[in-house]
Figure 1 (cartoon, one colour):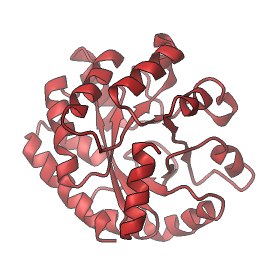
Figure 2 (tube, helix red, strand yellow; figure 1 turned 120 degrees about the vertical axis):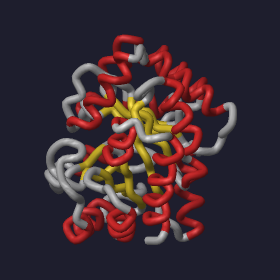
Figure 3 (tube, rainbow, N blue to C red; figure 1 turned 180 degrees about the horizontal axis):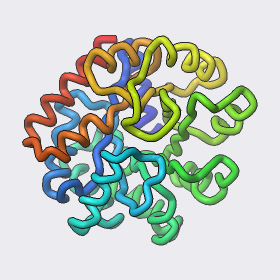
Figure 4 (cartoon, helix red, strand yellow; figure 1 turned 180 degrees about the vertical axis):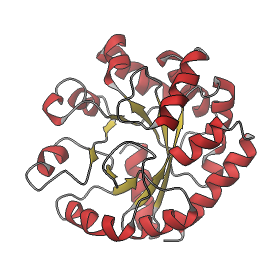
Length: 263
């Protein structure tokens, strides 16, 4: 079992929902983002999504686009992102880490080399938003063979015909995007999410985690109550953009996690 699979098995045994947080690697600099990453587990984060900065993040809203730009301008690279995970693992060998981003940096490095290096530093899973299931031979299947979970996104437009294809080689968990559009664009509504999550769960045994549009402990609780957990990214990254102290950001994350865990 991967760390992701172990984490969700443990949460299920405890009857608890998951809280997943996203931060951008290297934003606003590698030292700050590493300090934040190291503090996330104690703040209640069950799974860390670590963004790989990229020049053309087409699925992301302005807040995460700007985070990627700040990271790139500060000199963040894919190698430095892998180095962050290696440094994090020196003090935490349990918390799952998922790299989230786009295929271009991985392709440029070379898939085989990337997977070998990612596995070696302690990466547990990948979310690559611009690789559809039709391209599974590119990265998804090799990642699964290398022992990394490949986590797919489903959206409100993923209909009954499309869903089996999306689920085909997905592992770890399924990330349900609660709204149509880019990150940070609207607020998630539990009443709208609930039937969609139920529809997906009828087709898979994978945990279904819901993200996009969650900005408060109350929303995290409401969303987690109708899914297996909640993901928050933009609201956290916004505080990084505002140059809030790491301790203040972690206190905000702690509140979100408490909300999700109370569901």
